[in-house]
Image 1 (tube, rainbow, N blue to C red):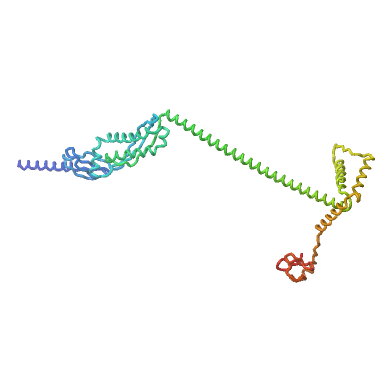
Image 2: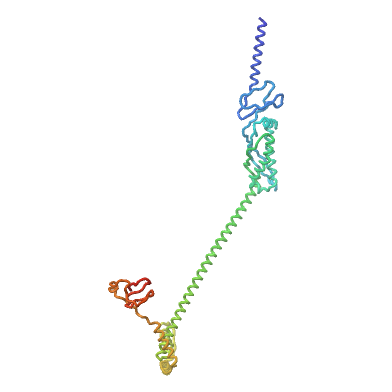
Length: 381
């Protein structure tokens, strides 16, 4: 009876041990993580997400490595070539390169803990940025944000790959200088803006003055051209008037000479008309002329000499008469007969009386009622 009780107890103990070992062998790995298993402190294998089994008391889960994207915000400072402190705030996004056992092993054992990894990551980014910023001036740093990020990515890619990670993105969120530097930069920017505004204002003033000068020059040119044209027209009008006046004097002189009268009588007439006009229209003017008996007698003798036929050269008279006859022949106009409208309407077109032969355009029929337009006869209106 005692032996049976002892065997039962042993069986229960063994069963309990088996249940305990089964419980100790069950491990769960969260989604987006992988488990790193070690045996006696040495890497053994990788556990996938979900339910897994390990050898109790022999295998241990060293760590659970996240395989989703991870972010870290970094803050560090750098010094420019002209000894200005620049403060950076950056955000880095990275992830495990792949789920291969070798990569997971590098990630799990590259650093002692996550704090050491964060320190190494910050140092790598800071060293890359400092290397680039040290070769540039403070005034150039703000405009080189993209170049700084590209330089940091190039050097960080290789570093992260050696740790089993892949860089997804690196963003420089803020670039700031010391307060004194920021104030001086603000003054420099304000001065440059004022200089640029002054340059633009000067250019605008120059353009406006230039356009005004061009407009004024164009107006002066147009006015001068108009004045010149007006003067030319006035000169042409005056010249035409003088030519007409001369022609009138010449005709009058020829007419007088043809009648045996000295053309000098025109000068006497103009002189008397001038005296009359001055006396008539003058205001406050005094005109003196000889009004004595001897003066009148001299004027009468001169008038009789101008109108004496025998005083003129016969050849001059003959030439004057010839010019008068030529002028009369040139100015003589032959009247054109106009037909009666009633007669014109009664006679059909195309049947005028005209000498034999083809008439020329514009020719007038013998009865004076038709004109040849080049193709047919048409009645004169």
